[in-house]
Image (cartoon, rainbow, N blue to C red; front, side, top):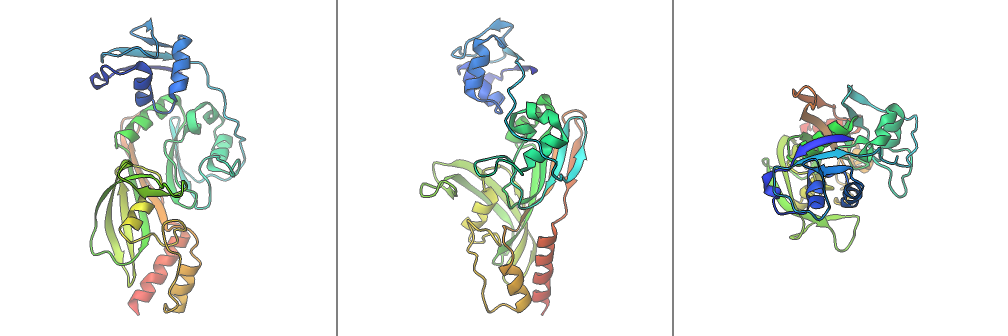
Length: 312
């Protein structure tokens, strides 16, 4: 990797290794310490140490070796490509597919499929992924194909310059849209869950009503921040959990509902959440681009049932 950047003035007085993790968050502090010790990173064209304090305005040059490849196996799995060029990929991830290998999911993930489609991704942090979607959330993801694109898009994501819009079907009837701002962190009672916590990180979601039904609402939601499970936790916090959410919703269906709706809700086994729109400034052309993935069949079908039930 060859990269040059100037340290912003607001980092003055901080350690160089800490500044590097803020400017280039795809790498760990430990890795930056190693690169600094081996001379792969210079400050104003001079050797530097991890503990050096910066003033702001200095030029950092990174001439780092190729990274060790992650031990992920490329697999010839289908990938729903929305767009591809020399810099990036836009993927429409189906529900039920894990984004990234993890304990219990070592293969069969989106990353395994992407590495088969584009072998160069194995040289990039997180195989080029800029953000992730939960296993049972469908929709759009952006993947960088080069380290320079990865760096640029990660910075844009942190600066909230990447537009991410979702659609969801939630329980209950919302009168109007709004803005949700909380702090989110890991639940102290269950580390697999996220909860509203005063010690957590800021999380902001905007939402508006697309259509109301007798006991449900179809929403459009836009992320201002991108915390784990953010939309799911925020809607549960409003007491309007997403239909089918196995963690933050209560998957009970009233037996008083008409048969088609009862069946549709009972058989909907994942959160009704879809990342529909994705917009960003292309790192090469500097033009704003936007992509859309239509709602998947299961959500479309549920909406049709809800519309039929409302019209009766």
